[in-house]
Image (tube, rainbow, N blue to C red; front, side, top):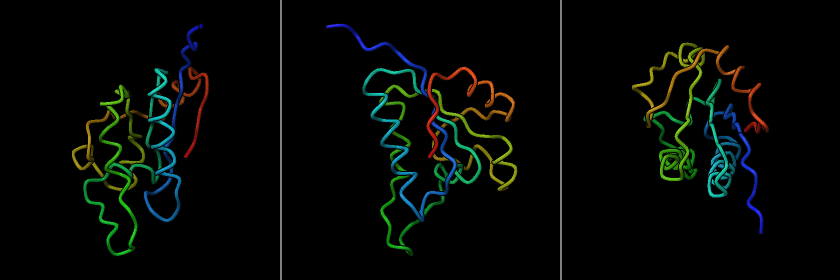
Length: 123
């Protein structure tokens, strides 16, 4: 049986953590791709940066906190995790306020990653 050809998969997380299922679905998709030994990169843009905020408490809105799952990415071999510098600035956040280590990238570098990806998924 032949091996699955490795693809460069880029996941863009653009939505806030609660209000819809996009964040949880994005996390599930990233983990599923990682299990199949694909080259996975994740970029948090716009309100998606709040997926990594240390200060998230969904208790008042009675929702499950899926955001803790993003900290498991390195366990699944996903070590290329990036955050938009522009999004951090826009929402007055710093990388220190995020729940896991990330590399902060300018939008121009994110566009380069998008151009190099075989497939891009947006959540």
